Amino acid sequence: MTDTLLRGIFPKSSIRFSITQAAGVCSEGIRMHGSDFVSGWLLGEALTTAVLLSTLVKGDEKYTLRWQYPGPAGTILADLNEAAEVRGYTQTIALLELAPTLEEALGGDGKVSVVTHTATRVVRTGVTEALFRDIPRDMAHFLSFSHQTETALAVGLVMPPTQPVHLTSALGLILQPLPGSDLERFESARQLVEQPDFRTWLETGEPQPLEVLHRLKLGEEPQILTRTTPRYRCGCSREKIDMILRMLPQDELREMAEEGPSEVTCHFCGARYVHSPDELNAILHELAVTN
Image (cartoon, rainbow, N blue to C red; front, top):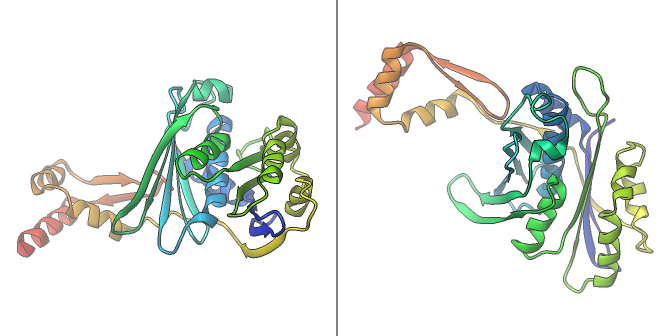
């Protein structure tokens, strides 16, 4: 199954939508982290949600999405950009032994935050309560209240009970009214999307994206504006790690060099960057010359 992201509108109703099949993106993230069935499911929901939100990003901005819950799952985080390049991680990888169900893993009400940023500045931040104990619905609640844009959002995953952990389907849909929208039609579609039966249908893995759009019963054909292939892309590199090291206090760098090789592990992809004492001392020398 090929990953895809469709963005479009229902022109008569003035409702915009994005719909994705992101099983490949999610499975790549699960593989990189070695997630189990519970943490892999949560990561899949977060990454599918991130792919959908990429259609809301403008220019060189990026979103960092963070869900925080009191249970053993802790924090689930995802980054995304306009090109539908996403990455993410769960704070706890081995969740199955700690919490065999999603309800136990989340543990109760939490918080959702979104930071909009560029490479040089923070553009916008927002936080809302995570009252639904459900990653996609808690994000819809955030967008409706913090961004003040009424939102319906649903994600349905299919995860076979086999190793290695992976997804065979990750369908996601987001709906938002445009200015001048028929709000009655939007509310009718939102109520349908939020029904358990709709999510159960997505979780069969059988629907195709256009079938999902027709299921909304808006009485018109959707207009597809763009098609994108989403990707799991971390973007970390040794050069970026070196830049972070240069920002540390020099006393801390000297201590690291004296203790032996230093290892930094990327939270998003698991890549490990090892710096020998000689390399750390070279950075120190460079900083001394610069200063």
